[in-house]
Amino acid sequence: MTTESTPVSSNFLRAIIEDDLASGKHETIVTRFPPEPNGYLHIGHAKSICLNFGLAKQFGGRCHLRFDDTNPAKEELEYIESIKENVRWLGFEWGDHLYYASDNFEQLYQWAEYLIQQGKAYVEELSVDEIRQYRGTLTDPGKESPFRNRPVEENLDLFRRMRAGEFPDGAKVLRARIDMAAPNMNLRDPVLYRILHTPHPHVGDAWRIYPMYDFAHGQSDAIEGITHSICTLEFEDHKPLYEWFLDNLPVPGHPRQYEFARLNLTYAVMSKRKLHELVHQGIVNGWDDPRMPTLSGIRRRGYTPEAVRAFCERIGVGRGDSWIDLSVLEECVREDLNERAPRALAVLRPLKVVIDNYPVDQAEEFEASNHPQQPEMGSRMITFSRELYIEQDDFAENPPKGFFRMTPGSEVRLRYAYIVRCTGVVKDEYGSVIEVHCEYDPASRGGSAADGRKIKGTIHWVSAAHACDAEIRLFDRLFTDPNPDRGGADYKQFLNPDSVEILTTAKLEASLALADAETRFQFERQGYFRPDTQDSLPGRPVFNRIVTLKDAWNKK
RNA sequence: AGGGGUAUAGCCAAACGGUAAGGCAACGGCCUCUGACGCCGUCAUCUCUUGGUUCGAAUCCAGGUACCCCUGCCA
Image (cartoon, rainbow, N blue to C red):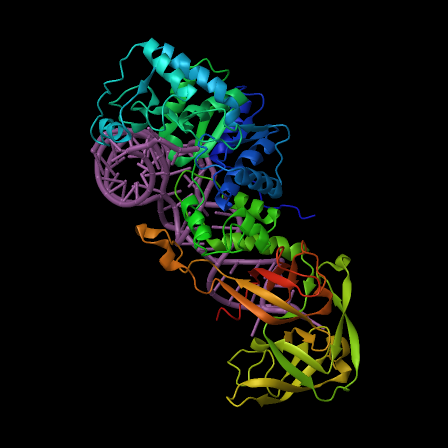
């Protein structure tokens, strides 16, 4: 029910599409999100998903979901499923347009033979090392392979035998015959096919040879009728090759590739290799660990798809490297949740309070608004009694200047209940305050003073006898450095040892005991929380902190 | 410098030869039964730099500088 109010601003991709539509170059646009199913999607992918699906939606076109599954050595069914689920969760639909590059393998193979017949591809028998040496360097041209000029028939025969599985992995490859002296390394006779006796997650054991990305991507775009093939900057160098295939093959269309800068987030790592490492070395608890920048992690943490979409719109899109501050993402969830999260009272680190002048056996209920700014969200009753818990941070025996919570001798309001005055404390043998004593003002029932006096501070509380015990997990950034990738140093040295704090003695208002796992709450004065989807149990909830509330006091 | 890119505020980012949008952050102030939310205000005489063209330049031209990407049978 949340509307995304983030204004749609101009960017170079929208401008290109507007021009193409206005000039009549295209009547409708077709984009695609083309993940390789070799890992879980992360927030950087969300940028690409929002761009591709968002652009298609904005301009009345369509967006395909296509698995770029050309390397079975790294790809798995598990990843295919998680990717579909994540895209759906983000709020996008591909309808009938689910594709796999591997569905095009036969066509790609035929095109490879076509290239051979045209004298534009050949079977290479040099070893990996030799190919590397022959390739030359960034500043020196490469040299031609001794196999580069063999007859078409011989190439065809060898290639067919590669397909038939006659040769072991690595024995041969098929290469395009372009230009070993090209300044663009991608044009120095790129490899088109390699031999891989590995079953494929989507097409099973049908193939012994698999096409490389470059030989599959553009042609798949053409087959699907993609008009705008949007990818990240590192593929810009591949564009001449992308064009070369489209120009030299009888493809049914000619998509155009456009590049944008990938998302970088502070206090996070985004490379698949590093995310794999965090998971497989047990540094985090799986791909959906709430501290992970994966969509699964963000989702479990409690972020909403609306917030992630708003984030992707807000950060814009350009062609220069940029690092978005984590706080931008956090602010997006706060904005979303502030609108719609019901409020509740929860004490994370309890400090016992006894209201000495309140009857021992008495309990009374107060009506608490579920959302003070949105009365239509209703209210619930909270129970008050003689013994309560308040937040340890909300009491100070020797308050710093400007502190207006509970402190000996002064008044503070217990939200929705009464105004109380602290009259004394009980300390343990080490001098720590373990219990606070107060007297309440019976004339302030509901929280307002009968004489109209202003009470500066209002704190949250929970009745000791009526509270629900809970575990609460406080997450913080995974790294201590804003750029853990910096300078090639080992990013793991920047792991934040306090990235998660588990509080096992939290006390919640009773209404939270059976909280629905999909409901996000604002625990007043603290932050937004949601029950953990794996570990929360009815009556014994486990809450994840999604994000804190802004805190002008703590900042001082 | 082999090739390809990018330079606008602390972080993103508009502007398409007509006199520097917007968001986040920050900083003041107001409001407040959440130190939240909300509201008001401040925040680039200037667009990496040096020249040039022009009545007029972030936008065009020339030369510098900085940073990013490319030598996988990965994508």
